[in-house]
Length: 220
Image 1: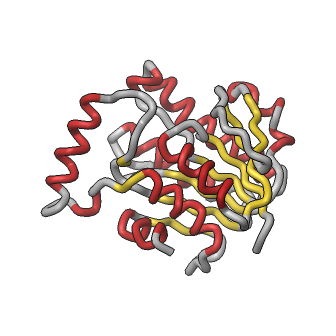
Image 2: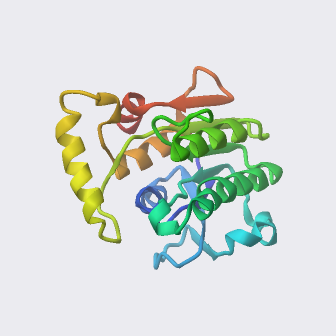
């Protein structure tokens, strides 16, 4: 399978930035379309960068063409400014883009979710991640793949002091207990996203990968 066309949202984020670079280096992908609010600054013969308004997805939905939509869009409540705005990014934008891609006959969908995602959870973040997982499953993709990493490790564009401290504590703690929540590097998640497209899945139309499976998938 060669010369696939990939579509990416969340290209400027921690996972997305690794994902775009890996896709551009991967000979199996002949074209990479990224949809972002600000430029990545990347210039490459395979890259088409579209600066878009996620509040007006219908105005650029026809540009979602090809074989795969990779969705790594996300934010935090602090960065978004409110629960309502976080929901807009983490659920509404991602679902609406996925819906548009399915309507444009993009065949495969790969979504970064989260460990503990559960639509019935009382934890807001886990709840919206679970709701999105459940709802995109109903869309008309040939293959829907959900990846559920834990805390993401990697160099972020912005400094997050408390998050870095939490990451250090989590690295130490999860060596002994709570291993299902041990950190995973963002580049490994990006590798797992790409490798998931080419793996033969137990359930062809819908697959979920938890943390242990992501480490394995990243090493394929």
